[in-house]
Length: 590
Image 1: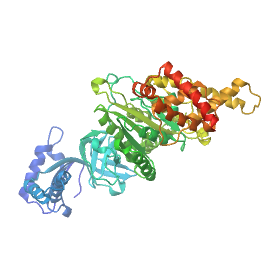
Image 2: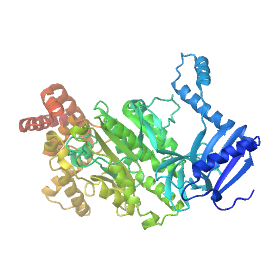
Image 3: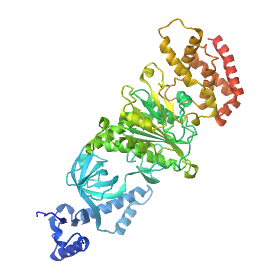
Image 4: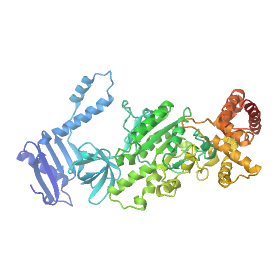
């Protein structure tokens, strides 16, 4: 039957309704949909046979659906069974529970507002008939796939899909849920590997969530925050001494590919063992094998006990890569609002921006610089602003963020790097040239900075680090000017020798974070200059033996550094004097 323009009402049936039944349905439609703006003449009523219903009927009034079919009843009962299955324990009588469920089950006519698909592909669907759909609302397609509204227009809305678009066909029914995207949260997530929707993908058992949090949350207000003044130790000497990170800070890790960015983040996670800090690692656009290797590394180090890994691999659709960091932040916020300290790593936001650019172009949004949409700055600012240290009135928890950005040929002035640099509280720049020279971590002293600075350092670390950064900068500059000269004065030679020792000191293997005690003692000794005469290749052996002696024989100094975070002038003088004595003994046996 051809439908004229107007308000469409269609009755789908298996068994043709009687005249009396049709009149009752028509009366219902009139009472429900005739108003000041619509008369009975504006309603086009039609009936269509549909054997797939199994029995009963479906009444579709515009965008609203009343489902009283066998297919709809089975769907209701199956939902009830699924809810029961999630709660049933291994020792319970499943048969009796299912029988009780069947006996107590009462059918109700299903009512929902629905639309239909007009196009689908590349992770995007266009949906018509959902005039009241809200931005960020979750929709459910008839195939069971979920999507989120990302683009609203006069005629239709654009939906990003959290599943394969090949399972969606044109004219498929789409229903509103009235809910926003959320992820399960709880202590049970620790040690698990999840996808962007919070579903386990590590092959383990399902977990029982303590609740759900929306993936998009407003950032804490200024009143709800407090200053960053508590150190979050990375265990990496070059960072803790020169670019300290505080709890609640956002410190960017930036550099070309394969320069050790992820290694710094992993070492920081490993170093939180026993410090009461929960960790969340978000992998965006990484290979599945890379994530598996990373989880294996964390598990060997015993770090998975306090870590949640959220992975959206390169093979996942762009919508899942887009939502991954927001999901990870929601998990981190659960722990923060419990008063705990959290470290979250976004690896990496360059791929996140590319995924968002793909979605925006597919949604036909206007491209801007480097084809990114105009709101790409807001994409990352609203994410990173959620990291903060809450005030004591709000529980005192914190989220420390380590976003990672990949540069092309060291270009930090590109669009996405400059955006994220302006959002964060400092950056650690890893230089390719240093990396290839064997300086690892390859931290560039000149371009790296922490805007929190000494506020996030203990008094002992402040005193020990002294002028390390200036000495290194001077060494790098002097090395360039003197590499072609053989005639050097004694002061220049001494400065070059001291700089080489500092460079050697700051080299560190992956997976071997240093405690604050070790860092303070090593920096104190090397900065004093009393061991400048030692050959560079013997420095590490000397320090290892020296540290063992100090920890065994001078427990009071070690305790002051570890527990109080202090180092007095007398203790500093004593450490230097012991190093001088040990050097003579060390060199005599070499």
